[in-house]
Amino acid sequence: MVQRNTKRALLFGGLTAGLSFTLFLIALKFVLGTRLLWGNVIGLLVLSLILGLISLTLYLLNLKIAFYVFSGGLVLAFIFMILSYGSGPGAWGDLIGALAFIFLTLLGLVGGLIAQLIVYLVQKQKS
Image (cartoon, rainbow, N blue to C red; front, side, top):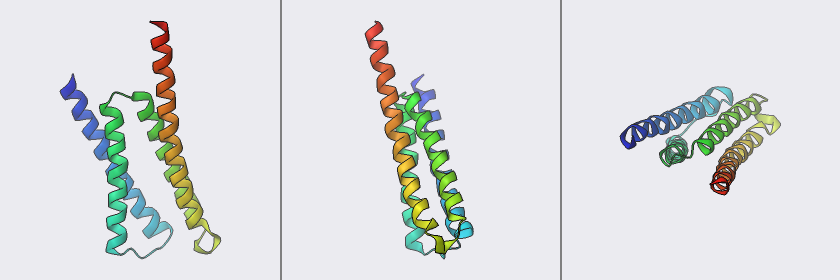
């Protein structure tokens, strides 16, 4: 059981990190049209690895509700970021997109942890 959970956690963490990095590159290079330097790419890689590590940890600790809410928040954050980047570089879309990405990602993480805590407390109260 633990070995199976570990393999899935590694899979989900790796997928989260890989897809996050790919979406960051697509959003910045093609949608926003920014020229990426090596420092930017390394920063995006580190951020993607952190997001993958959070996803891996939530799944590994069997916090399924927090994992799914965090994943949903991450998907919404990427959608909103890419849509706001599409408004053009002169319309403050890049700043709004980056701030919205951070806000929605943190909202998904904190909201998922709070929902997981509520479910845990309700189950503990029943038993």
